[in-house]
Image 1 (cartoon, rainbow, N blue to C red):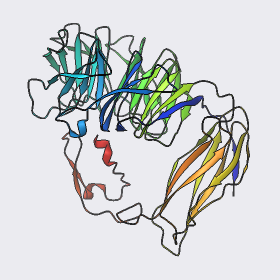
Image 2 (cartoon, one colour; image 1 turned 90 degrees about the vertical axis):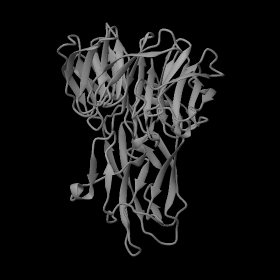
Image 3 (cartoon, rainbow, N blue to C red; image 1 turned 60 degrees about the horizontal axis):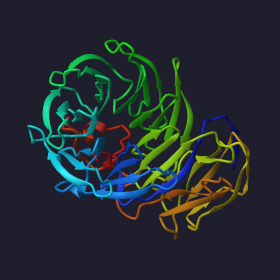
Length: 452
């Protein structure tokens, strides 16, 4: 049965383009002028011309020699050089004076080449700030690049990322929250302030006197840093997923939230949701320029424009429907909700699926603006295949066909509903281990590629 519902929910994101680049498993986005530096787990770095956001164009690629799969995790740029943080692979410095032909200038590994974890790079043009988890933030002189050298090291709990503003360095320090250090003298950085955050601090972005912090499962914190020695929490907005990156401008904050992109507006009172979009991709990172958002979604680079939606606009509460294990003589039903956040009626023309094991209870019809409907998907394992795509066809101008991936019983291997085997795993960044005995009676999700 279809259940109509009515609500008012922010949307305001239209898709300008969706592009497969020359690399795959996209990890980050860094923008310098009209170029985007997009690293990936496979295929290394793509340098992409984004002068026309509706048609991004790969200018060149760089694969880091000596690194697994040519992989570097995050990049920053100053002048003719780009600096890539490669965790234990060191920091690759490439000459980009000709972006079509990036050339390796040097590989920096610091004074101690053992167990380095270069996660993120930030620069003010003279100093490179390298976040490296429990090994702190390393300050490196790049004034004579590519001849660079370490200046000092600022100790942290678990530095994920940093941002420089004037002579203050704002550090996302994991479960320790944020730290604020004066780097007026780079050879002697001094801690001047800090604040616990609502969750694990993973990324930071600053606008005037406000610091925005991606805090994982707790969403985004807004912190007043007008007095950096005494930062204060203004507001927390708990996003729907896992906030890993934030990119702010004078009006809004874009959030990479794992399952979707969310846009928040802010004022002195706090933050509110004004836009979101779930394309079905895995949102790893993003960067915002004015009203354009560049989103690295694992398989694709998706470019959004923030604007008021004038026509029909479809969104779904999920684009992946995963059934638990179902016995042959049994069936299972899961709901999916369609939302129309546009200003014109959404016309649902068809819902297409070819697998007889899945039955979709969605008929053609019209969905009014600011409303939603929930329809069922039934699964009874039989003679069909274990996975299938549902295609929903509508009059949404930028998403005329939306796909929902549906999975049933895996042909091999464990799945939801199976008994977990005994195991013991190392915790990321050498923080100990965790075993089955510690997790008894708790729901557990193992997301293996978060180890990127």
